[in-house]
Structure formats: structure tokens, C-alpha cells
Length: 358
Ligand SMILES: *Cc1c(COP(=O)(O)O)cnc(C)c1O
Image (cartoon, rainbow, N blue to C red; front, side):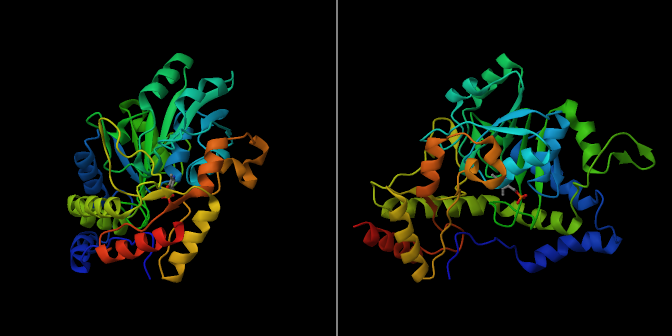
């Protein structure tokens, strides 16, 4: 069975050797030395000034909204994982969907201003598959209308845009380190922010208190030494992992039918992380045919993202039409890509796909 992704696991002994440091001290959570070391190493690796390692990529979205006092309307994308819009609804905000750009599949910055009302407080956009949103246009709109910008960067680990980490854009960016993501810590995530939010977010992550001093509300957003140890074991392997993914992408590129549409990975000033391999079919019927044929050969693909978030039961009260997102979400399929996938697997996948399309 070939899955759409395969969780990268470091050599067991390497993981255990790192974990042993926490084990020997019997200090396994609450800002232990492995969590602190992982935060430092992540900041170095990604060239970021401020980053907190947290429980997952959802809680950090909620912390971001809370830290920026967002309670009203938030302009957001219909083409993302459900966690993006769930975080808004969970925090009592009103999602206002703006359709996506057909090439990048990120929110269409040209359509944002039309959706702004006196109640709009923020823009929450996703760098879909790690492809950058139009960060410059979004920043300009936010400045003009006095809005906050949050990026769901769950897919953006290691991507750079104009020489900067993509995760450094916006008032706050978040990332997920879930086991299915490019870099993972089993479960986990992080929040990236500017200096002035540091104290607030530090408190929010741990119940709003430091020792016996109580300052604010807070939640439990901190992660454990067991999780941090996984991150510390995997981070040194990232350049190897990225190199192999890049190679697999070029094998796919040489074998996929040229007429098959792909999102815009090759943008100026952008370095991609090769995290996902989506292809866009002519019709949903085509997609279903290919998906089924691959499944018969024990190859699992994923309809990522489907359905368009404006079609979910929990967002129905905020319903608007997002024609492009609705259309693309029915026609996009992510193909397997992960270190360990073999060239002959890619040959089988692309041959099956071509057979079904002809
Ligand atoms: C995975 C993902 C999340 C949620 O991350 P978790 O760590 O699983 O909570 C949020 N947004 C996007 C776009 C994702 O892909």
C-alpha cells in the first residue's frame, strides 16, 4: 500500500538518545530543555526572531485570534484545511469567505477589499500547499483598512519568499507539526509573532500564569519533551528530506502528462518545500476515475482540500459563493510524495493516470 504521505521517522536510537536527557531528569513537560532547544533550533533553521512551540497547528490559530483581540468579521479563504475556519468559529468570529486565485489557489487579494465592512478586523489566509499568498498586496490592504493579518502556514515550513521565511510574514503566522506534515513532532505546531506579542502569547500558552503570579486568561498550548525530542531528531535531516522531495518532484514532472494542470509552484523569488503534489483534472468525473484506478493498485491519493469550506454545515450561515474554490476543490487530487517513494512507484502512478485520461 502506498499512501499519499508517509510519516518520516528518525532512527529509533537517535530519538531515544535525545529523549533520555529529559527522562533522566524526570522533566517531561512544562518548558523542559528539549522544548527550549527545539525552539532555538527552529528559529535558527527558519531565520525567525520569535517562535513558540505549541501543542498543534489549531490551538495556535486560536491563540493568534485571541492575542490580536479578533472577535468580529475575518476575511478568510474557502480553500484550506477545515481547522482554519473552525478556529474562527470556535473563537466566535464570523468568517467572510473570499474566493481564491486560480493559479496559486490562495485567497485572491484583488477580491479582498470588496468584502471589507465596518466590522472587519482581520484577514486569515492560508499559504496553500506552501505556495505564498500575495503577501504584499494583503499587507497593503491591511495597512489601508487597519486590519490584522494572520497566515495559516501549516504547509509553509521551510518555504522562502524574497529571501525571507514565508512564515515571517503577517502579524502572526502559524505552522503545524502534525505527523502528516513536512516537518513533524508527532503532534505539534508553532506560532510566529512580533516582539510586542511575546509576553501575551507566553502567558496564553500556559494558563495565563507564571508560578504564583496570575496575569491573564490562558489555555494549555504547551507541548511535551517527548514531542520536542522527535523534532530535535528530525530537524537535522531536513535538508536531506527536502533534496529527496525535490528529486521526486522532477521525476513526476517528467512523467505527468503536460496538459494536466498544476498549481503555480514556480513563482518569482519563491523557494518551494515540495510538501504536496496536487494535480487538477478537467472534471470531477476524471478525478474519481483516476482515484479509483489508483486505489485498485493500492495507491492512496487524497482530495485535499475538498469540499470548499463555504460548503460545510458549520459555515452555512455565512454562506457565499466562491466559484473558483468550489470548482477546484472538486477537481484537485494530491498524489503520493515522500522520501522512500520509489521511481517505479511514480511510474506506476503516472502510467495509471495516463491510461485513465486517454
Ligand atoms: C494540518 C493543518 C492545520 C491543523 O494542524 P494540526 O496540527 O493538525 O492541528 C491547520 N491548517 C492547515 C492548512 C493544515 O493543513
